[in-house]
Image 1 (cartoon, rainbow, N blue to C red):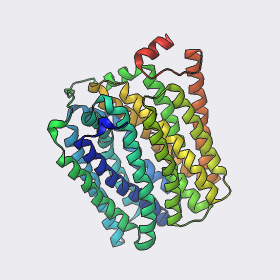
Image 2: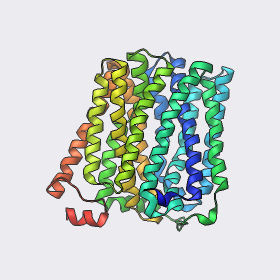
Image 3: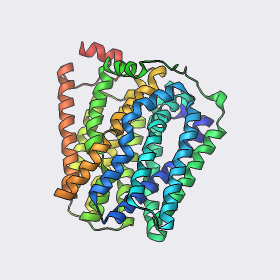
Length: 412
């Protein structure tokens, strides 16, 4: 299945990503716990922190343009070094006991600014390592790598926080970025499949918008992902609040809840890898399943049943997001890929500044259960609407492969 991915450059990069992503998930858990400790369990403060970290995603289209213009390997070396430095600063502040909530807010926002360029660059860099034929499997394998780290990171973070406190998690994350920098440095540039760089010119962002608008497959995928990611994918907020506010667990159990969700997500990534090119029906079906499971998770009476339902919730979500990512990349030309993925990241993460504070506010006013249920309900409504539009366009449940030329014939 992954024969086309067996390149030295890709193996190096994937190994570095496992280490770095594990550290990043440790920091996310530690940061959430730190915010709750600093603000006496404020759901609104937790939502604001997450919102500030993702607010710069509104500039993702610009970040994609940067990825199209310059060496992606060089960009990643800069962004990874900066992200490691920010983690180190937060670790030192926490270690010395001088950390304040406004500093956490500021560092979260700074991390988001760097991520604006890092995310679309990493997405577009995959094709330079494996080629377009291996891209679908590379996207799925990247999701699997991400979720291996998502399983290990929260579990380790819970143990580390319980044993020695949150500062250690931040320091480990800072060191983990060194693994990515080493992997990038050891790559053989001659083996990368270079794509032509887009020259700096006026109107490049408008060009990307027009490109997506002319391809129904792309913009329908973006609409679905916007609602699911903005209102349904706030587990960084809702899982912490459910674990602490409803089930009254400690840091270790919070890590277990994140791990249960990630375990299902890993299964979703592996399923997506075996399916190859996704279909429209897969996007709608997995979005529907995710929405239903998310609402069910908010209704669970005890922590164990909550953990059990998080597994299929994660599985459905990662199958959906991996299929959506594949749809965007496989339906885009090499010269346009950075900007299109910048737009995808804008839709995928740019709504978080709205969704996360909203989830935190709902949790404070109506309770954590209602916060997670409402996210699933909004996602479900959006899924039904998109499914009805697709059915109306095709005259039947859409099962065509997501190729622009085929879809154009289908809906004409």
